[in-house]
Length: 77
Length: 399
Image (cartoon, rainbow over all chains, first blue to last red; front, side, top):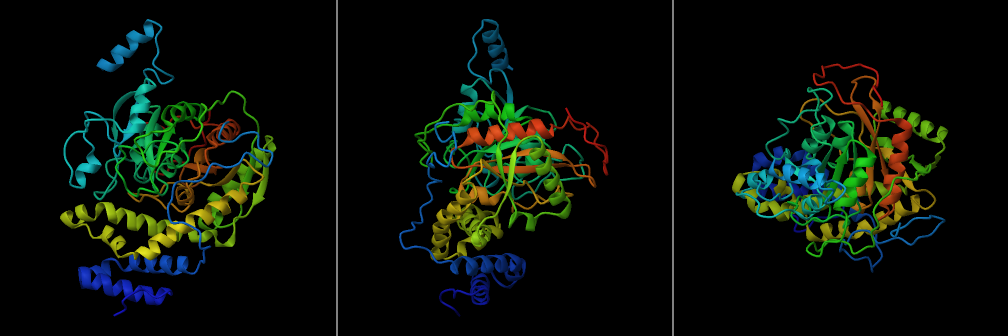
């Protein structure tokens, strides 16, 4: 059993399948097969994207843009 | 009726509470509405009647609106009984379908919806009406039953952009009781002076997901807008932008599970629990990706007012399917404001088709102005037939 998902979809799919089997049983693996595949692909895909160290994980909504590039409007429209 | 009578009396005395004085509105059954049950909360194990209004509902009332009821929100029990007002064999969309169908069927002129992936935009497009999803933080989420805290957006659905602006002006603004509310300057949107917008027609990622017929209609729409005076230019998003759908998938799964896992266990609902298996490191990596993905969208917006994409992959699907949120979830993930306007009826099904525009953060004036201008060029749909029949092939009936 994998203790932690590896970074490629095949290993993540195996890890997720094992976890679903342990948590919910055989039947759930079949029921959730498509979801497991989707989730594994998503996890593999995002893990391939490198980020700058200072990028924080807190989503506070988008920042107020500068009024620039010739736009007459902005947050104070 | 008591409230309506009272508002009538006030109006006769020349006193109006606000721009929505006496206007009947519906509210998606995901917002708390005082003295009404929140059915969606009840189905997840909570009971009782709300004792207070959600922030957005309170603002509608302050503007004079009369909340005449809540609109059906499909949940784990499925889509019925709401149907598409253009053809009852077809779906009205996803979770905001009750609010969209109520406006599309001309039951009320304005409703509140909610968008976690795209429900505040796609169902209105399926039902032939207009909608706006304001910037994340622009409209209060207080009293909104959560699906996914960092993705949920209150939305406004109406028959026209003029009405949308009234609704948006009512619900927008800082709410000190909502931790995610944005303290950003806000002036009421005005649609009195409309100018042709600069439109960035998105040429990658989005069209890959749309049907051929939808892409053909988008080409036709872009030509119509350009011929009417809009500056329409092709834009492309970064190649890596397509990871945004994976980011959305992971965040909504994890946040939904975090909120609903207890109720899911009690109710034997298996699907949400897969989100419990998303490792924290992946959830946090997905959250971190939102900033660079937003920056990619802002680069595409650098020289234009709005980005133009389809609002859905095609017309409403048959039966109870909610449709794919692939066109809408990027703007929920980035938090950028977006809107939909009707672009006619599908040649094959006779159902409405919608375009989607997105603007820079907190630039709802630009967004609504562009939408209103596009609506004036393309035209609005008349009300659907009360007895919309299957395989409806009538020509667009415009006004």
